[in-house]
Length: 262
Length: 352
Image (tube, rainbow over all chains, first blue to last red; front, side, top):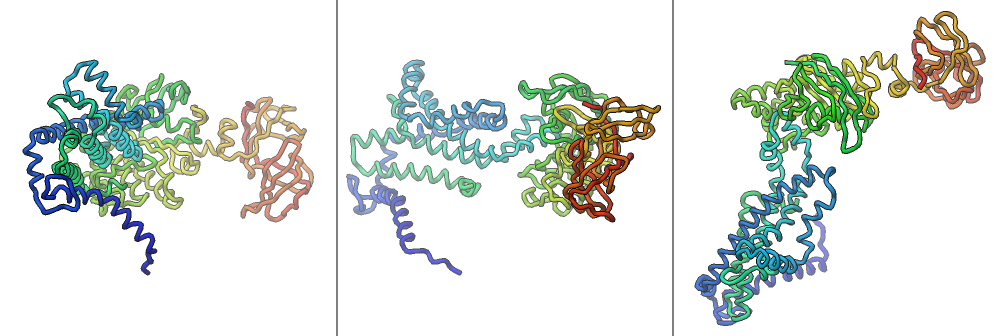
């Protein structure tokens, strides 16, 4: 028996979808508009503005920086976050409760405050070069996501499985890689995606830490918008979106996205 | 392959809380010993100490003369079966069973041959390529058993292995566990809170309470001759009646309850009887006889039907007592009766 869906519910659903997808369509339209200014609906069709991104040296450089930064910060966050999440869950009873809160703090602290304090302490205080400073900032920014997501995965992991492996002769370090890690794989991948996307889209923290010669893509977009109002902004936004979609698509291809909703 | 286990004077702490107090336990070669007790009595702690997941504060653990006390868990060669099975969810049944062999560096084909043979023995050969998620509880526990047995461990340990199974399966599985353990003559330690399970499966049972072993003996001895009132209560002696000896005639004595009821007790049956002692009996150990006579005077209360007898909640000068009476003469609540001891169903415990 088919259930009748009430009309208001259908309308509401459609409205929500328009609200979610609308801005994306507008950006997409503006990016292909054959005008020298941002406009919607697009007038004419051109891919010129996508080509233009790569003609502007600042965009080329910042795309590379952003990708490097996102990859390295995510990798660092996983290297720190996986053992941290493991320890927090494995020794939950012995550890004080505030310890796990410490790892969430960077989420609670406004990003702009994080950026400013890093500027004061790392960039100015320790006078570190810009890229390492950015890397520290982004690692701190994404670490809480890594720890939280992997923790959630480990929370449902039965540690007696680990003990079973050890009792069968597998040393604890090997057990971690052959037994624990494969069982929290979905959490690690989810953490990777969240961290990567958070890093590549970050403005607030990066704003303080970028400097002469080195910037990230979102900061460059911001700088560009302050001076120009051409469709390059729209096309570069589409590019950023495509990058995010590409990451999701790779994951979907290899794993399926169902684990995100698990 | 099988070896005797010896736990000597082991004390253990969780933080500052003492959880085991000077515990000693010897398990002979090929013997199955159960650790029985309520939760928090230290039975699982003992198992984890032997397995190497906890370190004792003091004392030693040896297996076949090999000192395990400071040896890391993965070098101990002990087969473990867990309550929640603890199968590797990402490996097939066959890979689960082969895991321990792989750690021992046994080559692929030989490994698979042995794992398959073990699965055959537990009747799971057709499920070799399934993932654990696709198995029933009983099948999972068989895989866990196969995984622990295939490494031919000198010691096999079970941590409440059947408590997640339903009643019927529990009985089948415990027979199966006992048969496999007997066939391999593997020394085994079995942790459970279920008295029937422990008594039915074990050569000897250690009854534990508050981090100590209260009595360590065969099930028969524990059931019929508990050594103290804790064990007596644990194995179902409902009536623990404090008594005092008032007269001695050689080894035989006359003893008196708090209410002044007198019982004649044979030294031949009860051995040496101290001046103050506890007379322990199950409901079956005191027969309810109508009217007055030799024994403990009582007034019957609630009567329940047990099939083989009637059970009465009796009121006596020594306190409430549970006793059974013949089916041929049911007594109404409030009847005057006498409780007559059945000597081989009763025992004498030291006063505490």
